[in-house]
Image 1: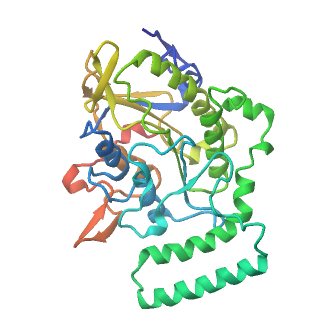
Image 2: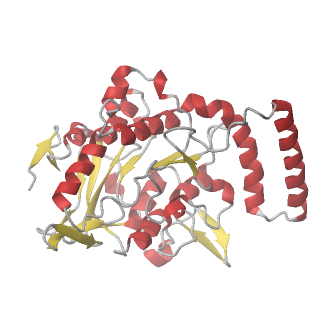
Image 3: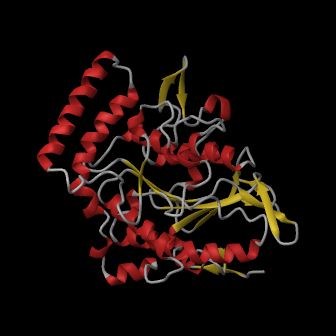
Length: 366
């Protein structure tokens, strides 16, 4: 029911529901030939985040921090900006460190109220008393760690307490949107009730990246794109909610000189079928879907691959989830085949190329 048109000098073809994404058409790399292995939400999310459909594995955010480390001692290296309305499908597994040391898991920030729960000292507790509590707690934790040196959760807890102390000063400054100009707030759509919530998190993402946070994820509550009914109506509302803030993030990163060193990835876990479900819905499709990337060495104004004429199956220059992961890690300076961790008697990796056949897709890169 919606028209498509070509945008920018590249002539990227997009729906009329994405006019703001059209404004950054010449900055994005649009992959039209994605495939995945599952049509189950939880399994497909685990696959795109962790490389396998089984629960309990590290996400690629955790792998990235394991491989690259942190750039800012005062903030977590891996931050998750989840929806104030609730967790996404599969919950905290989307940013778990799995069997990697727990220090590599994502830290959830809220976009409203207290961004990090339990960070501030309650007013009724004197600072000296709190300092004494924390010093005693550290002594107890380190004594316990000396008896159990392989306890990664405890190691992460000690490190997180130390980071939390530094975060008390850094977090309020990093998340203070009042310091942004009126022009920047309008660019993201903070002045529009339809976009405000998502816009806040996109703007927070830029502020965190600006301060050296290595990996930031933005999620929506549940799975609102799961349009088994009212497909056209639901897509219209969701695009209106996310289109402007997403495009603004790309534009804002570029004008601040950060886009070349930052990868923006916009994706779901699979696509929708080209045939109707019921009267006006669409069921899951693992054989063909689209996503886009911007910055970080990916080609600009480029369309990669295609599906058949019906949009059912990727047929040209097909990209698997594992290929995407291999290419993303390469763009971050990491070799997906060499980034490994010993677990259960074998060297595990995100892509497990000997099993999955994961390969780099050079044509996506500049």
